Length: 398
Length: 176
View (spheres, one colour):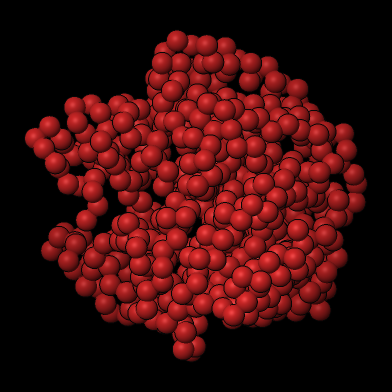
């Protein structure tokens, strides 16, 4: 029995928040023990959205599992695709052969995904605390990004665009113009959000000195991404364990020392600006060339050839049904996702399917630090802490 | 520090207890006997020129045909030196492993998940109970002998939780 369920005296009350509470961003059931309005102890309960994705992966070929990663963190599906695909490429040993254009497209997509995810975070975080206008503004800008994704791959939420060996297809005509338009526009939009929130007195009262976690605790609890950078941990996988073309690009990692909800807010706001800077550089640098690796063992045949050529159709059939055989071994790859580090651990026995696939979900680990953050605070603080941790339950429960 | 130097450093202290080691795609993994696991973890975390202060993930892999059935996998990272390594250990079905949640707090939920999914128990864990599956679930889903669609015809959990006659039992969907 967990301590948070034992009432020690008549003052204490046990309260259930969720799982259907609108501010829990999904299906978090949060059991809090209260003394008046003060939180004595708490216990987050997760698992209401458990679908057994790791078990399903053991019965699927590597290509087949790609769309399932979209359903993890459904606000940043591109980034999930990227992390999974990079893990498989590391297992296959082809991560250095990805064409440069494909790498730039991947960076563009993952940075757009980061901005889109942060916009939803800002919108809902502000809405929970009572700032309605920001919600409308953020979703207006997110629509731009979602439209661009729709241009590139036809879907608005679950993309399945980044594939093993490159990306599914080249960028369509007009995409770069839309991107330029967005990048030029977005700096001013971030200024608008700052005007609405950053020095707003109500916002400061609800976020400053709330949900504090120290630098040592942040590392020890394993929390990742913007949440640790709000506690003064200067760590970003894009810079410290670089992948793709990130080493060639010029960007800064925002770090704030305060460790409260407000610091995490500032980190994400700055990250949006930095992502926009990366996009600006990508527009200038993106080269022409192929977008898929020339490795027929691992990559599906181009659709045009499958339609025209009998032998290509046969090869396509075999690759879709049986998948490719990965070498035996185990790898871990983690990518910097908007929520934190999303990692895939793959154990391969040399078959066409992973023997074991473990997803390191940043949301899962961030929630595990929640009792530490809210302890001693007021019941109303839970809402702003939930908002600042920015978790998604598709990813937490898997 | 290269992987070879790192391995030498571990070998000098725990040489007798290392079952095997492997390097694949630039990642070093060391398998150690489970009695020495906590000691090794403390060493890796506190040694000044290693400082593996971040536990990335912890999980298990099931090999039903092996006598020591489970591999426990710990992925470590040193934020100071930007190093990664993987520590593994083995355990039999029904035997408990020492918990490392006192060393890295993030292992707390990871160990709960491993217990939930594989049924591996951990000594000295502060609060070992199921996390993703319901508290009264029977069986451990990620074991290899647990069928993908659940045990055929076993609806005992639903029988206990669905009101009689009010809800229809969901039919299993087809999976490859």
